[in-house]
Length: 165
Image (tube, rainbow, N blue to C red; front, top):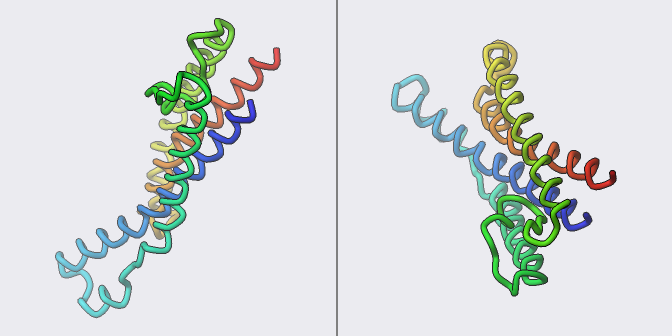
């Protein structure tokens, strides 16, 4: 259970840092399009250039941590082989335990259902986001990043509740 907690936390942090890493790129693309359409001057474009190097460092550190932790966990079982299902579904050992397979299946089903419902909520909030937020690019990047985070949190909570029964 502790490995599952660490895996979920590492993946959530990875998604958040990737969103922060991509936000300057989205803003830079937006500024470039505005410059090409002559909506802003070149001086404004140069003065508002965005440096994304600061956001790259934590992202790449978390990528390395996630790769190391996945390798570390798979080395303890499966003779050191990294299987795709271990990368996608955290901390599962579906071959050995029937109860754990059932818990993993129910947790994944609940997470998928919540992601589907939450995606409709996020999409319905986009029209309101246009009127309330000045930075629609930031809202869209973090809205997309929120989908897998909500799925991971739902997976973890469902797994923990079903495991404790």
